[in-house]
Image 1 (tube, rainbow, N blue to C red):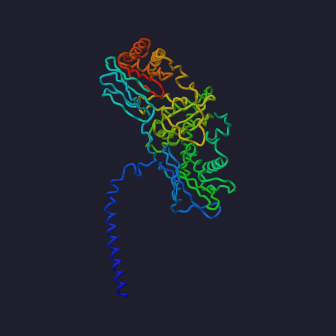
Image 2: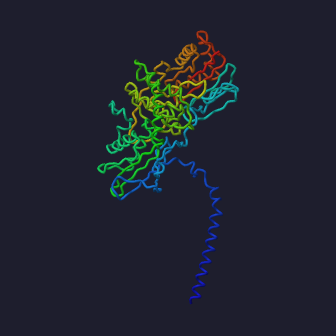
Image 3: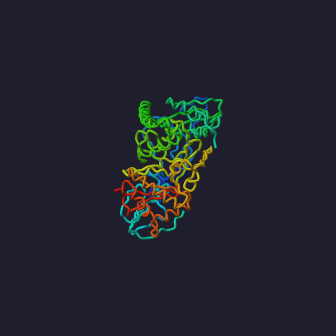
Length: 520
């Protein structure tokens, strides 16, 4: 009997070993094939950036300690957009670091312009390019980059061809309100408590925050508030996007959190000193008789003319990268603009959303009691000698952005921007209500600009209908009235220019048309 059992046991062991070997061979043999056929859309590098929330529990009452072991994570948010604050799982990750990750989808060009789907065709070999690129005699081409549709082309007096049909509130804040971002006033009592505790600790480079047992706050409250602080408190440029917190397993309330920083304290002091030096230079440019509009334009112009768009630059998303490094992307421009405005007592609101389908960040600003959209990133025209400041998106109303932008949903409502009287073009009398008026404005501006060899010569159309008519009349081969504008302005112009070549651009979103005279 024992011999039979022993034989059966040996038989089972042998069979199990054989099965194991066969199964192992299947797994090893098919692993490479499976990886090779994995759809690219499912690879880790192409997935949207996700926020992970660490929920660590304890049976004890606060304060709670953070273990060094890996904690359970769950995905809380996977909406692509401007940089997201995320959690960390281990204590060791609190050390200072200069590694700032990038967010997929951020444009790698200093402007966000692309040509119309029906580009102007005025020559046998015209140039139709992104405005940031130099004009050339190369064959017609269309360059696509994320944001406002602006076409730049060259028209000559020898050209032939045709132009296709062109298609298409809150009360006055208190002084304490201005110390915090616009969103702060919409937080509930629990969120305000979290916000204030984080700010108090962060300004002193504190570590662990222990929350009161009497306040009923959740981890969701903490994550929402931390994201707002990370996005809208530009002075806390040293705050890490990683966060760590603990929830009491008995009460289910948020027990404590731990702040993490990108740099050591001594490094932060040095960086802040460098920021102060550069910011004070800008603030010193403010004259006693300057209006709010003048100050906002000053901040916009300084940032647009001195800071290069560069997504690969260190600190490109914070104010240190803007003021000291002089390189930034949309988040950096937006935060730096808010920082300057807060110093000058001007209210702003940071806006996150999509611009022509790509994640973007810009501002709303309150000037003389009215709210406007302002996009400093779109004021940057390039990084070369032919740069100029674009005012297409300077103090514009919401309606201008409706077709090209989507605002991310927030727990509060952004202030409405209904006025178009604050735009650069309205302030300078450059808005045309008809084709005849547009032609006169361009002629007069060409004469004025010639005094200092300025460019561009520009006009904004008051409606899409006026824009279409003006663009057609200026650049269609059957009309080519742009050449007539050059001829009419030539004699009274101080500095002469080439009258046989017309370099131009247009933007279907802002309805702005620009001419770039070639001065002699």
